[in-house]
Image (cartoon, rainbow, N blue to C red):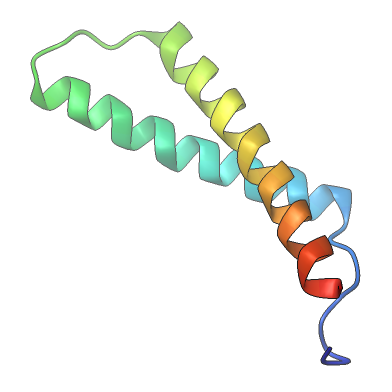
Length: 69
C-alpha cells in the first residue's frame, strides 16, 4: 500500500462524489429520453440521482476497503 493513499474517504467527499455521479447518470438518462422524444420527469431524475449516487458512494467505500487489504 502506498503511503499517499488514504485509508478512508471522508463522508463529505463520498457524498459529493455520489451526488456528482448521480447527477451525471441522471443527466445522461434525461438526454436519452429527450432524444427519444419522451417528456422530462422531475421525479425520475431525482430518483435516479439519489439511487445511483448512493450506489456509487457505497461502491467507492467498498473499493477503498478492498484496496486496503
